[in-house]
Image 1: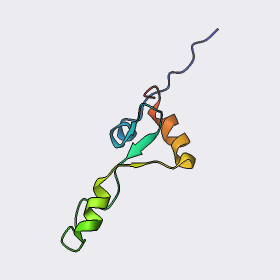
Image 2 (image 1 turned 135 degrees about the horizontal axis):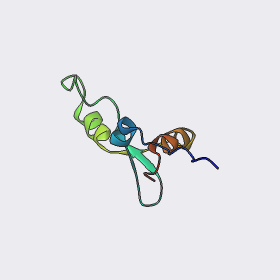
Image 3 (image 1 turned 90 degrees about the horizontal axis):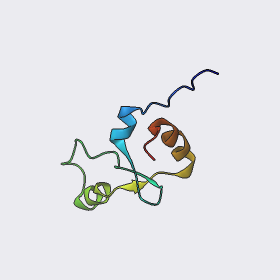
Length: 69
């Protein structure tokens, strides 16, 4: 009987996504790194808030996170 392969965590995914206590996956919004002068304050404040990942994408991210669940 052979060993099973271990599921490794993809470190790039682990740095970009976090799992909440209820199991949802949150991420930062895109579009905050540059060109801040041309964006209005309301838009920049809205982009600051973390958002919950859609359930269709969450399955692939959860698989990439490995044991971090």
